[in-house]
Amino acid sequence: MDNNEEEASASQPAPTAAAARRPIMRLLEQLGRKGTLRILWELRDGVPQSFRALRTSTEDMSPSVLNDRLKELRAAGIVELSGAGYVLTEAGGELVKRLTPLNQWANRWFE
Image (tube, helix red, strand yellow):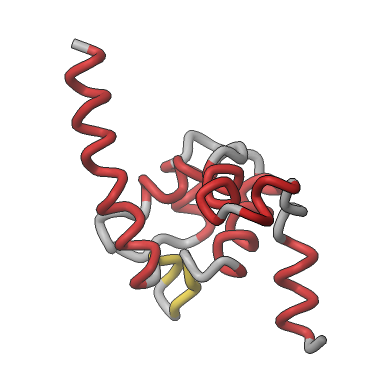
């Protein structure tokens, strides 16, 4: 196992038995972790954000939680750190695009 694999396995939550058999369960467990959806939503416009900017836009999420979620999202290939800050990968952009109809449904439900 190389360093990247070790880092990925250390930062990714251990999948439950159901998640190991069903990728959708693994994804839902990842998205259900505190702050994960908020980070994705704040990065949805494609503008890179520094760690500090993300802390502000996520309403001052604790640095340790934000750092843990960013590590997990990077290991999952959903977020990457560019020279300008954190951005969604192509896969992350596709995921957020698929969440947009859920946001539209939520807006109608909330009215």
